[in-house]
Amino acid sequence: MTPTRWWWIRHAPVVGHEGRIYGSLDVDCDCGDEALFRALAATLPRDAVWVVTPLKRTRATAEAIARHHAAAPEEFHVEPRLVEQHFGDWQGLTYAELDAGAGEAGRGEAWRRFWQAPAEAVPPGGESFAALSRRVAEAIESLTRRHVGHDIVCISHGGPIRAALALALTIGPAQALSFAVDTCSLTRLEHFADENRDPEERLGGSWRIAGVNLSAQPPR
Image (cartoon, rainbow, N blue to C red; front, side):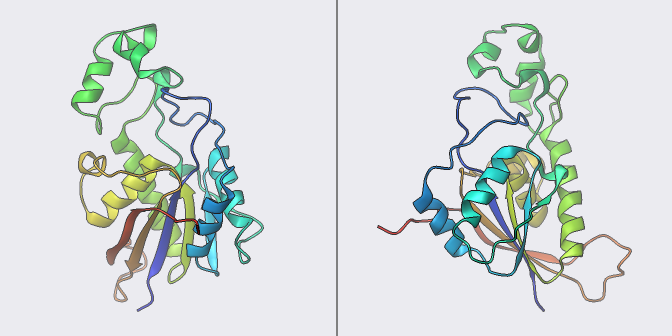
């Protein structure tokens, strides 16, 4: 049985937002480390679908890797459901500002509730990590069905990659938040389809974790 192999890469480091919650803001990233992107490209398969999110930091990272990958496609599939968590009114604020209760976004109990239940709490005007996990699961199921038995290279964000691990391990969103997902790290998941499954039913089958938060090592 040929698995559908997911190659998850978190985007390059964000610039200009140190100490701030950027969530689903469309911020820039640093793609200057050519040796790192060359090393990442060397780990990826030749015949794959490449997926990015609508945020430019994932496309910029994909383009930086593609420069060193002879078989990278000219076009990337854009999947909105794999975008980072929306932190609503908190986006653009620092943790210190929220701790101090500065402005409307930090007022009341919302910030305290978030740290008491970070997977389920909903930031004002935003979404919970649990909600993110549901939409990510829908996207993974859709793409896995569409590209069954093939490789999918997905440049996404820390939150969606944790949600993908939750789906593969059948664990809750709260447990998935414990995973470290560094920028430019590689997480590999493999899905084995149930050959007897009714095509109209949910994805089913089984997952194998081939690697989590792997670091590409540029040649010295």
